[in-house]
Length: 540
Image 1 (cartoon, helix red, strand yellow):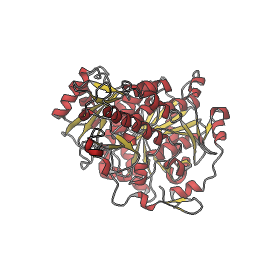
Image 2 (cartoon, rainbow, N blue to C red; image 1 turned 180 degrees about the horizontal axis):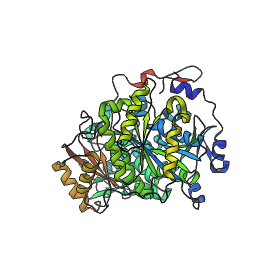
Image 3 (spheres, one colour; image 1 turned 90 degrees about the horizontal axis):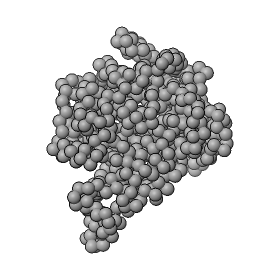
Image 4 (tube, one colour; image 1 turned 135 degrees about the horizontal axis):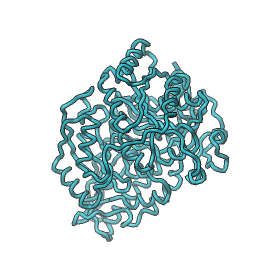
């Protein structure tokens, strides 16, 4: 069996202008980054404004194992399968973070014969979008500390700064730091600080929800960096940094066009994590893809309790999107750990939003036919259409049955209308309870005293109308990663609350959630190498 990187390096790529031409773009629509990657300026969306939107298909999963369920591979493979059936299909996925790439999960460019290429570039620095987000975020941090040092107006209380720094790497040593120590604070403001991973940055979330450069600047201006002595919020706009921060993101906001192993066009753009952010690629990439194709396959991180819920409540609301269908990915190893009840709960979660759902039973190399067919029959016995797929080893051909089923579902007219589970005017605590009880299956929600105080403060400040972004473990429907299956009668504990005023949601911290992951005992980085000719090995 060939490794992902061997398959990637053995695939003959087509010039990016040829890929662009196949979806109706010309060379003048591209900003090339070499022969096989290009950015597409946002103005293309305006030029295509009269074009009808294609069908939007979301790929999500049941509660996944630690190394993932194969959603990206399924997303890419399904796009290739639809192309093989003669449909105009595009793929829209997130950019990989170097944290998981060098840590435990590896890259996020798909797998086997269902990858976005060039795999090495996409998994490493790509077009520099994540670096741009990192620098833009840290510019805000530097300006805040200079603001404190200069004792500038408006006042920011040194102990009420909420804007940490970020780096695109798993580094637990940076979770808690002390800064301004030179001269024991005489030449600055000595205070506690910390780092988060870039994928957790509010600027990453903003980049992925902004509809234009102007909207990006407006949202960045709304970011709260700290509070004054009277607990009044101080924003980026008030310290005068929104222009410079937006300037650093001028190119990053434009979607990145690449191709798959079968030359299906794909946008790879933006990368917020789904356990601590909303877990979807950029809204601009999705909207542009919908104008350029009949089927757009996209994904949302982790299980339907996290990524899909946020996709529906946050991204679809922000962009007025109406998904035509959703696919729940089921690998055998997740099914064995969590069981049929867990799978059916995630199906139920999708249907709660009035979105048609199918199941993709994701074959791995050593899986036996009878085991996978058992899962398929269990799904069908419970009224869920399912197909066994083999996107890794067979590319698009490994999912023709699923692709045909998706096309059939999308032909239903009129298409079902997305139904959010809560109205935006509902109080924050009630939104949290709605998601916890209806999506997770919790019997009760408890709020810490700190969380209750924060909710009251945010509602008094006028942020009660925002959707909630639940930050919890992806390894369980509960807030305890050790609890598998589909438990009932459990309690969800809200430990903290923070508003991401620029992104436009309230982050709800459930249980013990890290915004700066650590490296495992044997990081993936130890297996990555490069030879004298520049050929990379060990990347997966």
